[in-house]
Length: 150
Length: 110
Image (cartoon, rainbow over all chains, first blue to last red; front, side, top):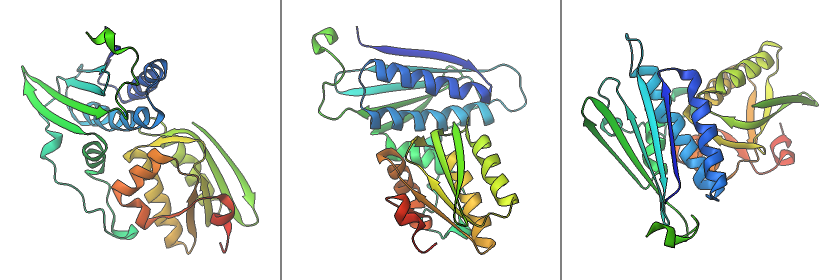
């Protein structure tokens, strides 16, 4: 069995911090390198906050799920929500060369997601947004005995 | 997140411990706003115990930097770990904020 992390929250900004904290505990329990754990936490904060803050405008309920699987050479994370269609990869990258007075933050979170992960993809499936992320682990097998993967 | 402040001459040194993300950034913004409201114009932020920062945290830093710069003050940072440094590099914040390796370097000439 590959180590797996699953968590589902409602459309509530206050619950995002609980997911990143729980993921950090999962990562520590499976000896994921600090830098990888932190990168995933940044990305989870960006995408979950986006989903709950903007994806469910004008409606009650809503659900966002995180499913992470630790493989021998990479971490694969899938985020699923039933909010309005939103393709994070459809956004233009922000101008990160402007001076401090002229800087705006819009789009920066998604820019971080794209740059910090090795692979990001989006699809709309059965009325849900599905974002999949991959982050390679340095040196391959830090994830425990590889024979468990067989 | 734990936020502690102390004065070093006329400079407010703010230490952030934990993570600066969508969950904690309102608390950080409130603390930094409090310093600004009390007339603090020179601020050094200690990132030594900061795990990661997301765009919500960058927003707090940018707002604070703009206000301090507008008031003739300054914002300096030190002690960034590898992840925070990566976020700064990707976002372009490395070029628009003053980042130093140590507290002594951040305080020098301020």
